[in-house]
Image (cartoon, rainbow, N blue to C red; front, side, top):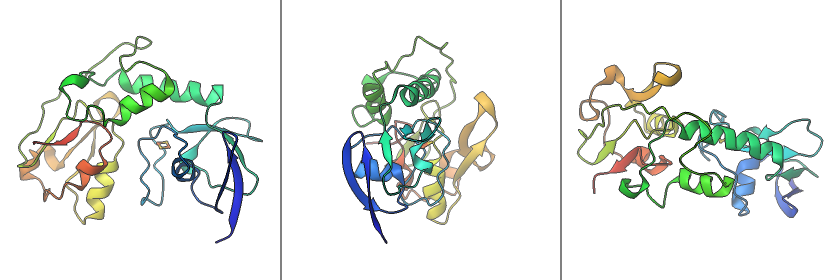
Length: 212
Ligand code: FES
C-alpha cells in the first residue's frame, strides 16, 4: 500500500494511504475521543459523535472514524468547532450516566474520565438536566456484572460478541429507553453468553466489569 504524509495538530505523520484517520492519530499519540469505533470493525458505526476533527478544505468538522487519510491532509483535532461538538456530545451522554467513580470498578481506566480531562469538562454536567435510568443491575453471570445504567450504548460489546459467533445481547427500545440487553431481557446467566469476557475487554466504562 502507498505511504502518504499528512499533518495532524502540526505533527508530520506518514501512514498507509486510505488508513482510518482515527487509528492513525491514536497510533501517533494524538488522542481523539471515541467510543463506538473498534480497530477490527471494518465499518464504523459513527454513532457516538465524539471523534470530531477539523480538516483543511472541509466546510465543517467530520468524524475521524469515518475519514480515510490521504496525501497532504491537514487535520486539527483541537479546532473550536470540533471541540464544541465533542463537548456537547459528551455532556449529553453524561447527563444520563451515574457519576460515582470512587465506587466504580472502572475508576482510573474509564474512557469517560479520560475524555472529560481531554475536553476540559466535568464528568457531572451542569449544562444539561441529569436524567438517570435506574435499571436493575444484572449480576447473574458467574464472572461479571452488567450495569445498564453505566452503559454508554457504544455497541462494542455487541460487535465482539457476534465476532465470537454468539448473539448474547443486542439493542432494545428507542430514544431514552434504548438499552443493551439479552434476548427477551433474560438474566445474563440464562442468555447465550459463554463467559468469554471479550465484551468486558472492550467496554469503555464500568458497565461490564469482572466480579473480582
Ligand atoms: S468513534 Fe467516531 S463517531 Fe464514535
